Length: 93
Image (cartoon, rainbow, N blue to C red):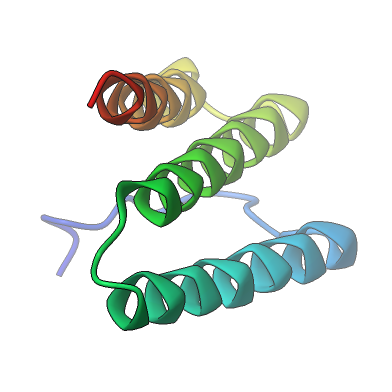
């Protein structure tokens, strides 16, 4: 079971971060529904990717502040970079 999932040692999320992630997830779902209703406009996809990047940065900062392994928070920041590159790619369309 540990092949695909990283076991984090002291990975207790703070209540503020859980609320923030829940709000971001709800906003992403609303934007996805709006994108489907409006004919898959790229504007909504850009916002979804932007929110995913912000969520990854929050995860990376939380991992860094909890003094987890360097690989964990660098991976989160790498995911954020990928999300922001997707936002930039859709901006040029």
